[in-house]
Length: 345
Image (tube, rainbow, N blue to C red; front, side, top):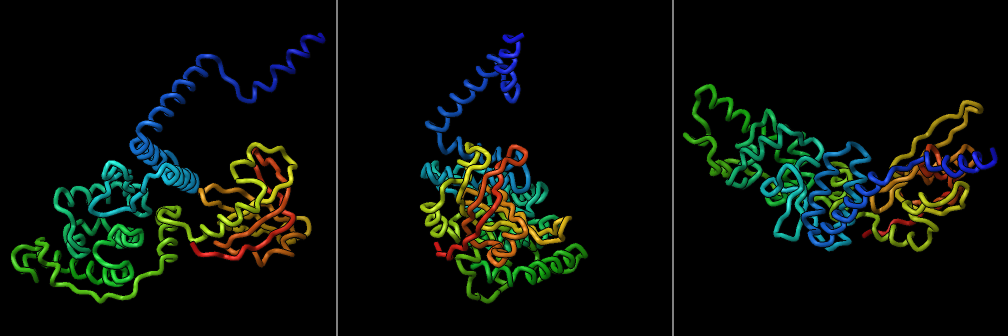
């Protein structure tokens, strides 16, 4: 009986997650092949990885995975190019042998039917202007919301600054819809016999206005790509707090419950609730680091009353607290919150 109990105690923890030799061998082969491909074909490997991550999940998990892959590209010295209506494909692609071009499928409001229409219309003839783009694509498929997303993510930067394009495109779309309607009814177009000729661009003009600030453009990236692609508005601040914190988000997985920690990040979300017992306010705050990884921080009523003014979305804060493993996922039970002054990148 003593030996049986001893054996059981040895075996029981293995049931948490264990696998046989055949399973282990498969993992080992995949690990070696993956390491070989990444070491010898980094552009091809990271392009495939980004495509796989953009297809594999949705929502915050997808954004976090792609953000981590983009950060790894940066570490490897690989440049990630933004979406481009004349160069992007459905998925991530290799450009100039050493760069990765962002794919349409990872842009918000750009679905399968839209991608097919843009790629089929573009073919071997690049779009020459936003007017040419709107004239040639099917505007019942490629709607205003799609065009706005493409403009805001920089996919049409070659046609003018984003602010000017955003102001002008609704009128351009309205005029082109009218022209196409007249054409379908047999009326003569404003452009003469050939409605789709790119020379029609000269019939439209729009005023150049001051473009968005770099910070505003980064916020567009976050909104429509799910993360900051070209830079990070808090990069200097995050670099500063990395010298102060005790743990990175990733390192928390290795720590035991109850460990005292100091971490820092951007307030991604602050959800306030009322407790059932005392009807007092508390909050669940999601912090995000520069890699796109996030962690939940629980702020109970007494602490929340002290620090609620610091829990503002898109600000950088430091939190001290204890590590708690909620459903096997690290969570911070917060004791103090310290705001960090924003330093522009």
